[in-house]
Length: 436
Image 1 (cartoon, rainbow, N blue to C red):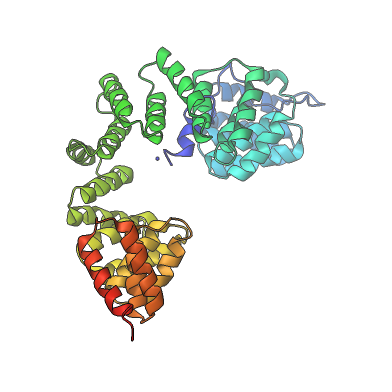
Image 2 (tube, rainbow, N blue to C red):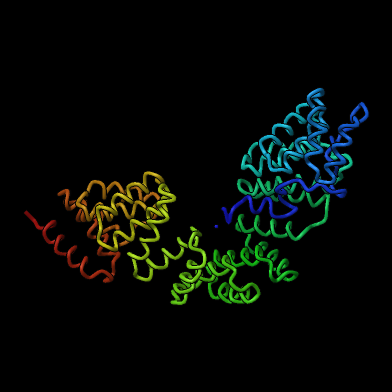
């Protein structure tokens, strides 16, 4: 639910990336971690004293003339990057950190700070390179806790591509510092992603035993129960969690999902109320659109899909939801256009091919129906409705043998569930198989 988003996870806790530096005596002062051969200049020392007080203007007034005369001083470059970072001048900060790294490739602080900044900017590949380098360097006076931070930041990046690697990163951090609640939450999330549901559940419940109001743990455990399709248990859990955190939008949305999965009427008014409170939340709007469609209100549902598509016109899932609503409203040419675009954007989406096959059938395009069914068959098994579409498409194209074969497949699989189509299939078979 990215981004039930990755930057929130990276920056929200000490285990991730802080949004801006937080100068204080407890944190390492902005200085290169490796000893500098010459003494620190008075200008740089004064700048660092100003940095401790968050007096950025004074620090810049000291650092700028010094760097003009000493452009390769790694300590001053790092300090200047730190000052720019603290003022959210991220491009300037990145450039200064990079110059500090070039001037002293062994600077742990410069590599770490550059990596954290690049991650905040979304440049995760380059961020990973800098953070990985930082883990190989001596943190000096900064100590093991700060090096553990580099490993934790790596784990947050790797979780999107390799849960095993992310788990290894986290274990490296835990060899340097004790486990934090954020670590337990990350471990639970990684286990969840890897399908290790028992381990994930145990970790989530450990967090909740200490902090019943932990929003990430509540949401994570609810997600796990939903993934397992344990809907009654998920409903009980979510109702209890909402007693602890009334009105929490994420938990409310999950409860609506669970209720909808159980076909409970309460889902729709709950989602409508949630949508009224958060009209610009695309995830909630999408959920409401889906529930409205299932509740038999394709027009109301489609009104929401059209709004979502205005913001994301190339989203295949939205196009498919829109197309399905158009089918329900018998607007077949428009549905064909929506499904055609969806399958072009996401050729591996079986729902898109299913919709295109049906819309093509309704707009008398049997060749496209057959193509769409062929593509669909790569991802999903045949069902009675697709057998019937195969049969009628071949029938329209006067390919009698193929049509008869698929009518027989349809009759065998339908088992009396589609009486109108079964009558049609039998009538067509009488004609197709009539001896000349």
